[in-house]
Length: 290
Image 1 (cartoon, rainbow, N blue to C red):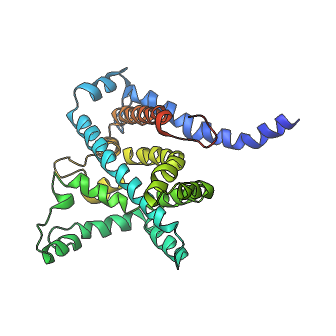
Image 2: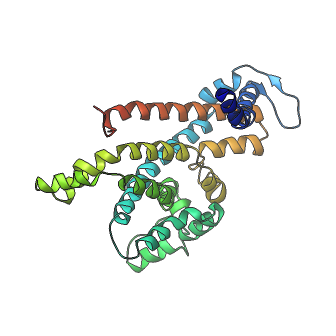
Image 3: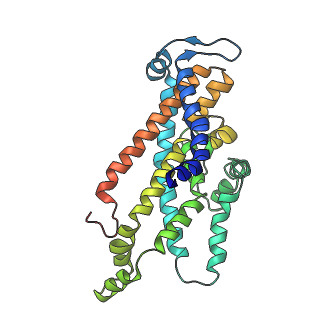
């Protein structure tokens, strides 16, 4: 009887998962095996879309390189900033609740508003950053308008939304047993020893979570390319998801766009598995032997 009640309660979630996730995934894979242009009938082509993607499409490899480069820059930067802010917010200071709210506010700003704000900040002629650099007699930059600086600029912009990671880090910090810090003090250790031998090891599960979620989000970057750079300059910010969007809705090549989507799925799944495998060597769980 309890099993039936459990299945009945879980049935809506299972039904939604099958209809809205599994079903569309299967449909996209089938479409990826066709040559289908919007307004025309699909033609089965087998794995031609996948072989074209891997061998005859230079824009695909450009999108892969740009996406991975962005992820390599943005994820560690956001992790470091979020962890550092969480350490500060975990201290006993006056108006701590106000600062916690303040640092989380950028997450609540709509992506369109953020894109407009940062487009102005990065404007090479009238932008805030170049104005500050000029006032300090420092060389200015093209930021998102330069091929060499567009991805680092977008990575810096991503660190502005560190609020989610900071909140999760803060929750992890508050779960670190206080008696471990007291043990370090008894052994003559200072703040650095507490951070190195207590805080960081105890925070590795939280770091793992934020690393995985941050990497998945970074590999799916879209809004910045769509709203700010349109994949430029020179296709330098032609990120994978934006390339899928442009292929599907700009060129009306639904079959090839679905093949690109499955390529992204495989890469995200592979990187996630590799991170979890590596976690066996550096993630510490309280009460375990590892």
